[in-house]
Length: 179
Image (cartoon, rainbow, N blue to C red; front, top):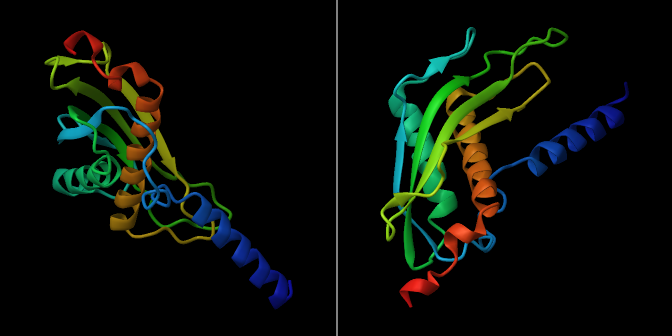
């Protein structure tokens, strides 16, 4: 392969990876979530499991990464009703070094989420929402550091939570009965 083709492939790969950045939209105005304003941002790891072959992350590392990603994504909303997010991290895989040509597991995160309406004093989702995110950060034999994987998976999870909340606009509509 010529250097020109290698350079072009590298640029294409960089473009694809940049397009998959789950935080690229954080500088834009947030999507409409009606009355939403983030209240409590609670992340717990009561029975977290790391998959075989995973790099190990502490509960504190996960809590810092996930609460940071939730604050970054949902702290942008300035509605006039508080909603609380409860997140349980259940399982993860932080990929170790990738060997070219040999299939290896990629990074993944499994969590369950509940949302509470502060004014109503109740949980909005009857059953906790299960979310799984997969992070394919490289295929070139090099995985990002553990800290980068934690941040990327947490940002992907926060984006997935936002997408789930967007499926339920009725949760964030003005309460006409109280007016």
